[in-house]
Length: 410
Image (cartoon, rainbow, N blue to C red; front, side, top):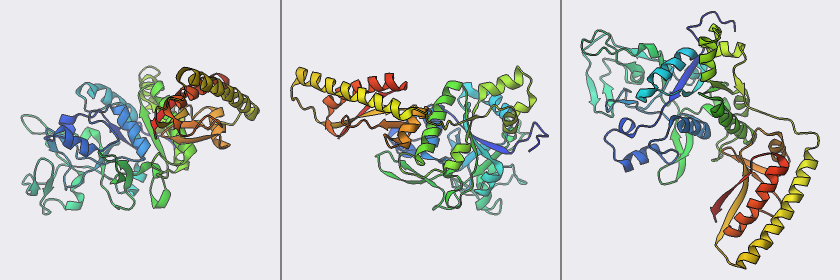
Protein backbone atom coordinates (compact mmCIF):
# COMPACT_ATOMS: atom_id res chain seq x y z
CA UNK A 1 0.00 0.00 0.00
CA UNK A 2 1.09 3.58 -0.57
CA UNK A 3 1.75 5.31 2.72
CA UNK A 4 0.07 8.71 2.79
CA UNK A 5 0.00 9.56 6.48
CA UNK A 6 2.66 9.17 9.14
CA UNK A 7 0.22 9.41 12.06
CA UNK A 8 -1.88 6.47 10.89
CA UNK A 9 -1.13 2.78 10.57
CA UNK A 10 -2.90 -0.46 9.73
CA UNK A 11 -1.23 -2.14 12.70
CA UNK A 12 -2.01 -2.47 16.40
CA UNK A 13 0.57 -3.12 19.13
CA UNK A 14 0.05 -5.11 22.31
CA UNK A 15 2.87 -3.99 24.56
CA UNK A 16 4.09 -5.95 27.56
CA UNK A 17 5.82 -4.72 30.69
CA UNK A 18 7.60 -6.01 33.75
CA UNK A 19 5.39 -7.97 36.10
CA UNK A 20 4.65 -6.00 39.26
CA UNK A 21 3.01 -8.20 41.91
CA UNK A 22 1.62 -5.23 43.86
CA UNK A 23 0.02 -3.74 40.74
CA UNK A 24 -0.89 -6.92 38.84
CA UNK A 25 -2.31 -8.88 41.78
CA UNK A 26 -3.55 -6.28 44.31
CA UNK A 27 -4.63 -7.71 47.65
CA UNK A 28 -3.41 -11.20 46.76
CA UNK A 29 -0.87 -13.16 48.73
CA UNK A 30 2.21 -14.51 47.00
CA UNK A 31 0.59 -17.96 46.77
CA UNK A 32 -2.67 -16.52 45.35
CA UNK A 33 -0.84 -14.48 42.70
CA UNK A 34 1.27 -17.49 41.70
CA UNK A 35 -1.92 -19.51 41.18
CA UNK A 36 -3.33 -16.61 39.15
CA UNK A 37 -0.36 -16.32 36.78
CA UNK A 38 0.13 -20.06 36.37
CA UNK A 39 3.35 -21.97 35.96
CA UNK A 40 4.74 -20.23 32.86
CA UNK A 41 6.18 -17.07 34.41
CA UNK A 42 7.53 -15.75 37.67
CA UNK A 43 5.19 -13.28 39.36
CA UNK A 44 7.88 -10.58 38.94
CA UNK A 45 9.04 -11.62 35.44
CA UNK A 46 10.66 -8.96 33.27
CA UNK A 47 8.97 -7.75 30.10
CA UNK A 48 11.21 -9.68 27.70
CA UNK A 49 10.34 -12.92 29.52
CA UNK A 50 6.64 -12.08 29.17
CA UNK A 51 7.11 -11.54 25.44
CA UNK A 52 8.91 -14.87 25.04
CA UNK A 53 6.09 -16.60 26.92
CA UNK A 54 3.51 -15.13 24.51
CA UNK A 55 5.46 -16.60 21.59
CA UNK A 56 6.00 -19.96 23.27
CA UNK A 57 2.34 -20.34 24.21
CA UNK A 58 1.06 -18.93 20.92
CA UNK A 59 -1.16 -16.15 22.20
CA UNK A 60 -2.01 -13.47 24.73
CA UNK A 61 -3.83 -14.24 27.96
CA UNK A 62 -6.28 -11.41 28.78
CA UNK A 63 -6.03 -9.50 32.04
CA UNK A 64 -7.88 -6.97 34.20
CA UNK A 65 -5.34 -4.12 33.88
CA UNK A 66 -5.29 -2.92 37.47
CA UNK A 67 -4.52 0.70 38.27
CA UNK A 68 -4.45 1.92 41.85
CA UNK A 69 -5.56 -1.56 42.95
CA UNK A 70 -8.76 -1.43 40.86
CA UNK A 71 -9.48 -3.05 37.52
CA UNK A 72 -9.79 -0.66 34.59
CA UNK A 73 -11.63 -3.28 32.51
CA UNK A 74 -15.41 -3.03 32.85
CA UNK A 75 -18.02 -5.67 32.11
CA UNK A 76 -16.61 -8.47 34.26
CA UNK A 77 -14.38 -10.16 31.67
CA UNK A 78 -10.59 -9.75 31.25
CA UNK A 79 -9.37 -8.14 28.03
CA UNK A 80 -6.37 -7.96 25.73
CA UNK A 81 -5.38 -4.33 25.14
CA UNK A 82 -3.61 -2.88 22.11
CA UNK A 83 -2.70 0.56 20.79
CA UNK A 84 -2.78 2.00 17.28
CA UNK A 85 -0.10 4.56 18.02
CA UNK A 86 2.40 4.72 15.13
CA UNK A 87 5.57 2.82 15.88
CA UNK A 88 7.88 5.75 16.57
CA UNK A 89 5.28 7.27 18.87
CA UNK A 90 5.05 3.94 20.70
CA UNK A 91 8.86 3.72 20.99
CA UNK A 92 9.23 7.20 22.44
CA UNK A 93 6.19 6.71 24.71
CA UNK A 94 7.71 3.46 26.02
CA UNK A 95 11.08 5.12 26.55
CA UNK A 96 9.56 8.05 28.46
CA UNK A 97 7.39 5.88 30.71
CA UNK A 98 9.87 3.06 31.25
CA UNK A 99 11.07 4.50 34.56
CA UNK A 100 7.55 4.24 35.97
CA UNK A 101 7.37 0.58 34.98
CA UNK A 102 4.08 1.07 33.13
CA UNK A 103 5.29 0.53 29.56
CA UNK A 104 8.19 -1.39 28.06
CA UNK A 105 9.80 -1.45 24.64
CA UNK A 106 8.57 -4.99 23.98
CA UNK A 107 5.41 -6.05 22.25
CA UNK A 108 3.65 -7.87 19.46
CA UNK A 109 1.93 -6.17 16.53
CA UNK A 110 -0.88 -7.47 14.35
CA UNK A 111 -3.11 -6.02 11.66
CA UNK A 112 -6.00 -3.90 12.85
CA UNK A 113 -8.39 -5.54 10.37
CA UNK A 114 -7.47 -9.00 11.66
CA UNK A 115 -7.82 -7.98 15.31
CA UNK A 116 -11.25 -6.62 14.38
CA UNK A 117 -12.16 -9.91 12.69
CA UNK A 118 -11.17 -11.72 15.89
CA UNK A 119 -13.62 -9.52 17.82
CA UNK A 120 -11.41 -6.62 18.89
CA UNK A 121 -12.90 -3.13 18.92
CA UNK A 122 -11.66 0.43 19.52
CA UNK A 123 -12.02 1.80 23.03
CA UNK A 124 -14.89 4.08 24.00
CA UNK A 125 -13.48 7.13 25.78
CA UNK A 126 -16.01 8.53 28.22
CA UNK A 127 -19.80 8.40 28.29
CA UNK A 128 -22.59 10.82 27.57
CA UNK A 129 -23.66 10.77 31.22
CA UNK A 130 -21.85 11.26 34.48
CA UNK A 131 -24.59 9.46 36.40
CA UNK A 132 -23.03 6.00 36.23
CA UNK A 133 -24.83 3.20 38.06
CA UNK A 134 -23.31 -0.19 38.72
CA UNK A 135 -24.85 -3.63 39.02
CA UNK A 136 -21.60 -4.90 40.51
CA UNK A 137 -18.76 -2.80 41.84
CA UNK A 138 -15.64 -4.17 43.54
CA UNK A 139 -11.96 -3.57 42.98
CA UNK A 140 -11.74 -6.67 40.77
CA UNK A 141 -15.15 -6.66 39.09
CA UNK A 142 -16.88 -3.52 37.81
CA UNK A 143 -20.08 -3.92 35.81
CA UNK A 144 -22.20 -0.90 34.91
CA UNK A 145 -25.97 -0.99 34.75
CA UNK A 146 -27.03 -1.85 31.19
CA UNK A 147 -28.99 1.41 30.97
CA UNK A 148 -25.60 3.14 30.91
CA UNK A 149 -23.83 0.84 28.44
CA UNK A 150 -24.71 -2.68 27.22
CA UNK A 151 -22.70 -5.24 29.17
CA UNK A 152 -21.29 -6.80 25.97
CA UNK A 153 -19.66 -3.43 25.10
CA UNK A 154 -18.42 -2.44 28.57
CA UNK A 155 -14.95 -3.96 28.09
CA UNK A 156 -14.34 -1.15 25.59
CA UNK A 157 -15.02 1.66 28.07
CA UNK A 158 -12.09 3.82 29.23
CA UNK A 159 -12.65 6.46 31.90
CA UNK A 160 -12.30 9.97 30.46
CA UNK A 161 -12.57 13.32 32.20
CA UNK A 162 -10.08 15.91 30.87
CA UNK A 163 -11.75 18.70 32.88
CA UNK A 164 -11.38 17.06 36.28
CA UNK A 165 -9.87 19.74 38.48
CA UNK A 166 -7.50 17.77 40.69
CA UNK A 167 -6.14 15.23 38.20
CA UNK A 168 -7.52 15.12 34.65
CA UNK A 169 -8.21 11.65 33.27
CA UNK A 170 -7.19 11.41 29.63
CA UNK A 171 -5.70 8.26 28.10
CA UNK A 172 -6.97 9.01 24.61
CA UNK A 173 -3.39 9.40 23.30
CA UNK A 174 -3.05 5.61 23.62
CA UNK A 175 -5.64 5.13 20.85
CA UNK A 176 -6.60 1.89 22.54
CA UNK A 177 -8.34 -1.21 21.21
CA UNK A 178 -9.58 -4.12 23.31
CA UNK A 179 -10.57 -7.75 22.86
CA UNK A 180 -12.42 -10.24 25.04
CA UNK A 181 -12.89 -13.94 24.37
CA UNK A 182 -15.57 -14.59 21.75
CA UNK A 183 -15.57 -18.37 21.30
CA UNK A 184 -14.20 -20.63 24.07
CA UNK A 185 -13.44 -23.36 21.53
CA UNK A 186 -11.28 -21.07 19.37
CA UNK A 187 -10.01 -18.46 21.82
CA UNK A 188 -7.60 -20.46 23.96
CA UNK A 189 -4.00 -21.57 24.39
CA UNK A 190 -2.60 -24.41 26.45
CA UNK A 191 -0.41 -23.62 29.43
CA UNK A 192 0.66 -25.03 32.77
CA UNK A 193 -1.04 -23.93 35.96
CA UNK A 194 0.77 -23.36 39.25
CA UNK A 195 0.66 -27.08 40.06
CA UNK A 196 2.18 -28.01 36.69
CA UNK A 197 -1.04 -29.37 35.18
CA UNK A 198 -1.44 -28.61 31.46
CA UNK A 199 -4.75 -27.34 30.13
CA UNK A 200 -6.54 -24.70 28.02
CA UNK A 201 -7.02 -21.12 29.21
CA UNK A 202 -8.87 -18.24 27.49
CA UNK A 203 -6.49 -16.29 25.24
CA UNK A 204 -6.13 -14.53 21.91
CA UNK A 205 -4.43 -17.31 19.86
CA UNK A 206 -2.34 -15.23 17.46
CA UNK A 207 0.16 -17.87 16.37
CA UNK A 208 -2.56 -20.28 15.30
CA UNK A 209 -2.87 -17.78 12.46
CA UNK A 210 -5.73 -18.73 10.16
CA UNK A 211 -6.04 -22.34 11.39
CA UNK A 212 -9.58 -23.49 12.16
CA UNK A 213 -11.18 -20.23 11.08
CA UNK A 214 -8.97 -17.88 13.06
CA UNK A 215 -8.05 -14.41 11.87
CA UNK A 216 -4.31 -13.68 11.77
CA UNK A 217 -1.93 -13.76 8.80
CA UNK A 218 0.87 -11.38 9.88
CA UNK A 219 2.67 -10.50 13.11
CA UNK A 220 5.63 -8.35 14.09
CA UNK A 221 7.64 -8.82 17.28
CA UNK A 222 9.00 -5.65 18.90
CA UNK A 223 12.25 -5.67 20.87
CA UNK A 224 14.76 -2.98 21.74
CA UNK A 225 18.11 -4.41 20.65
CA UNK A 226 19.57 -6.55 17.87
CA UNK A 227 20.78 -9.05 20.47
CA UNK A 228 17.19 -9.56 21.61
CA UNK A 229 16.10 -9.77 17.98
CA UNK A 230 18.52 -12.65 17.40
CA UNK A 231 17.05 -14.57 20.34
CA UNK A 232 13.51 -14.06 19.00
CA UNK A 233 14.60 -15.04 15.49
CA UNK A 234 15.94 -18.36 16.80
CA UNK A 235 12.77 -18.96 18.81
CA UNK A 236 10.46 -18.19 15.88
CA UNK A 237 12.59 -20.18 13.45
CA UNK A 238 12.49 -23.15 15.79
CA UNK A 239 8.71 -22.99 16.05
CA UNK A 240 8.47 -22.73 12.27
CA UNK A 241 10.61 -25.84 11.81
CA UNK A 242 8.59 -27.88 14.30
CA UNK A 243 5.14 -26.48 13.42
CA UNK A 244 4.06 -26.47 17.05
CA UNK A 245 5.18 -25.48 20.52
CA UNK A 246 6.39 -27.68 23.36
CA UNK A 247 2.79 -28.60 24.27
CA UNK A 248 1.98 -29.77 20.72
CA UNK A 249 -0.19 -26.70 20.11
CA UNK A 250 -0.26 -26.36 16.31
CA UNK A 251 1.10 -23.08 14.94
CA UNK A 252 0.42 -21.61 11.50
CA UNK A 253 3.81 -21.95 9.80
CA UNK A 254 2.74 -19.61 6.98
CA UNK A 255 2.16 -16.85 9.55
CA UNK A 256 5.50 -17.52 11.24
CA UNK A 257 7.37 -17.50 7.93
CA UNK A 258 5.88 -14.04 7.28
CA UNK A 259 6.62 -12.85 10.83
CA UNK A 260 8.98 -9.91 11.16
CA UNK A 261 11.11 -8.59 14.02
CA UNK A 262 11.38 -4.87 14.73
CA UNK A 263 14.29 -3.39 16.66
CA UNK A 264 12.97 -0.20 18.25
CA UNK A 265 16.46 1.22 18.62
CA UNK A 266 16.65 1.12 14.80
CA UNK A 267 13.28 2.87 14.56
CA UNK A 268 14.35 5.70 16.85
CA UNK A 269 17.68 6.12 15.01
CA UNK A 270 15.98 6.09 11.60
CA UNK A 271 13.51 8.81 12.58
CA UNK A 272 15.56 10.99 14.94
CA UNK A 273 19.04 10.69 13.40
CA UNK A 274 18.46 9.80 9.75
CA UNK A 275 15.25 11.85 9.47
CA UNK A 276 13.52 8.93 7.73
CA UNK A 277 9.98 10.08 8.40
CA UNK A 278 8.46 6.95 6.85
CA UNK A 279 10.04 4.86 9.62
CA UNK A 280 7.40 6.11 12.05
CA UNK A 281 5.12 3.24 11.02
CA UNK A 282 5.48 -0.48 10.31
CA UNK A 283 4.46 0.19 6.72
CA UNK A 284 7.32 2.67 6.42
CA UNK A 285 9.79 0.26 8.00
CA UNK A 286 8.80 -2.32 5.40
CA UNK A 287 9.60 0.16 2.64
CA UNK A 288 12.93 0.97 4.35
CA UNK A 289 13.74 -2.78 4.66
CA UNK A 290 14.07 -2.54 8.45
CA UNK A 291 11.80 -5.51 9.18
CA UNK A 292 13.89 -8.56 10.06
CA UNK A 293 12.64 -12.01 8.96
CA UNK A 294 13.18 -15.43 10.48
CA UNK A 295 15.96 -17.52 8.91
CA UNK A 296 15.21 -20.49 6.68
CA UNK A 297 18.55 -21.71 5.32
CA UNK A 298 19.48 -24.11 2.53
CA UNK A 299 21.77 -26.97 3.55
CA UNK A 300 25.44 -26.73 2.49
CA UNK A 301 26.21 -28.91 -0.58
CA UNK A 302 28.47 -31.17 1.50
CA UNK A 303 26.23 -31.24 4.60
CA UNK A 304 26.00 -35.04 4.75
CA UNK A 305 29.80 -35.39 4.70
CA UNK A 306 30.26 -32.70 7.36
CA UNK A 307 27.73 -34.37 9.64
CA UNK A 308 29.07 -37.91 9.06
CA UNK A 309 32.61 -36.84 9.96
CA UNK A 310 31.40 -34.91 13.02
CA UNK A 311 29.30 -37.83 14.26
CA UNK A 312 32.20 -40.26 13.76
CA UNK A 313 34.52 -38.05 15.83
CA UNK A 314 31.77 -37.62 18.45
CA UNK A 315 31.31 -41.39 18.78
CA UNK A 316 35.04 -41.85 19.35
CA UNK A 317 34.98 -39.10 21.99
CA UNK A 318 32.01 -40.82 23.63
CA UNK A 319 33.87 -44.14 23.84
CA UNK A 320 36.92 -42.48 25.36
CA UNK A 321 34.84 -40.52 27.89
CA UNK A 322 32.91 -43.66 28.87
CA UNK A 323 36.11 -45.61 29.49
CA UNK A 324 37.56 -42.74 31.51
CA UNK A 325 34.39 -42.55 33.64
CA UNK A 326 34.62 -46.29 34.37
CA UNK A 327 38.29 -45.96 35.31
CA UNK A 328 37.44 -43.19 37.78
CA UNK A 329 34.14 -44.41 39.24
CA UNK A 330 33.79 -48.06 38.32
CA UNK A 331 30.17 -49.15 38.00
CA UNK A 332 28.82 -46.56 40.44
CA UNK A 333 25.17 -45.84 39.63
CA UNK A 334 23.86 -42.34 40.28
CA UNK A 335 20.28 -42.94 39.07
CA UNK A 336 18.54 -43.05 35.72
CA UNK A 337 18.33 -39.89 33.67
CA UNK A 338 18.90 -38.16 30.34
CA UNK A 339 21.68 -35.88 29.14
CA UNK A 340 20.39 -34.36 25.92
CA UNK A 341 22.90 -32.99 23.40
CA UNK A 342 21.32 -29.64 22.67
CA UNK A 343 21.67 -26.55 20.51
CA UNK A 344 19.61 -23.40 20.15
CA UNK A 345 21.20 -22.44 16.82
CA UNK A 346 17.96 -23.04 14.91
CA UNK A 347 18.95 -20.51 12.24
CA UNK A 348 22.15 -22.39 11.34
CA UNK A 349 22.02 -24.30 8.01
CA UNK A 350 23.62 -27.42 9.50
CA UNK A 351 21.08 -27.55 12.34
CA UNK A 352 18.20 -27.17 9.89
CA UNK A 353 19.76 -29.95 7.81
CA UNK A 354 19.98 -32.24 10.86
CA UNK A 355 16.29 -31.65 11.54
CA UNK A 356 15.33 -32.29 7.91
CA UNK A 357 17.04 -35.70 7.80
CA UNK A 358 15.94 -36.84 11.26
CA UNK A 359 19.37 -36.59 12.90
CA UNK A 360 17.99 -34.05 15.33
CA UNK A 361 14.59 -33.65 16.97
CA UNK A 362 12.48 -30.71 18.07
CA UNK A 363 12.82 -27.84 18.29
CA UNK A 364 11.34 -27.85 21.78
CA UNK A 365 10.78 -24.18 22.66
CA UNK A 366 13.79 -23.34 20.51
CA UNK A 367 16.00 -26.18 21.74
CA UNK A 368 17.11 -28.83 19.23
CA UNK A 369 18.29 -32.23 20.44
CA UNK A 370 21.02 -33.76 18.30
CA UNK A 371 20.75 -37.53 17.96
CA UNK A 372 24.22 -39.12 17.76
CA UNK A 373 23.81 -42.93 17.64
CA UNK A 374 25.20 -44.68 20.68
CA UNK A 375 25.39 -41.58 22.86
CA UNK A 376 21.82 -40.86 23.95
CA UNK A 377 19.07 -42.63 25.82
CA UNK A 378 18.10 -43.29 29.41
CA UNK A 379 21.09 -44.47 31.45
CA UNK A 380 23.08 -43.59 34.54
CA UNK A 381 22.71 -39.80 34.70
CA UNK A 382 26.23 -38.88 35.86
CA UNK A 383 27.80 -41.15 33.25
CA UNK A 384 25.51 -39.85 30.52
CA UNK A 385 26.39 -36.26 31.40
CA UNK A 386 30.13 -36.96 31.31
CA UNK A 387 29.97 -38.86 28.02
CA UNK A 388 27.63 -36.48 26.22
CA UNK A 389 29.55 -33.42 27.40
CA UNK A 390 32.53 -34.81 25.50
CA UNK A 391 30.27 -35.40 22.51
CA UNK A 392 28.95 -31.84 22.69
CA UNK A 393 32.48 -30.40 22.69
CA UNK A 394 33.36 -32.34 19.53
CA UNK A 395 30.14 -31.40 17.72
CA UNK A 396 30.61 -27.73 18.58
CA UNK A 397 34.07 -27.81 17.05
CA UNK A 398 33.26 -29.91 13.97
CA UNK A 399 29.87 -28.37 13.11
CA UNK A 400 30.65 -24.79 14.16
CA UNK A 401 27.56 -24.40 16.34
CA UNK A 402 26.85 -23.91 20.03
CA UNK A 403 26.20 -27.26 21.73
CA UNK A 404 25.50 -27.94 25.40
CA UNK A 405 23.94 -30.58 27.63
CA UNK A 406 20.47 -30.48 29.19
CA UNK A 407 20.01 -33.08 31.95
CA UNK A 408 16.90 -34.41 33.63
CA UNK A 409 16.12 -37.29 35.91
CA UNK A 410 14.11 -40.18 34.52
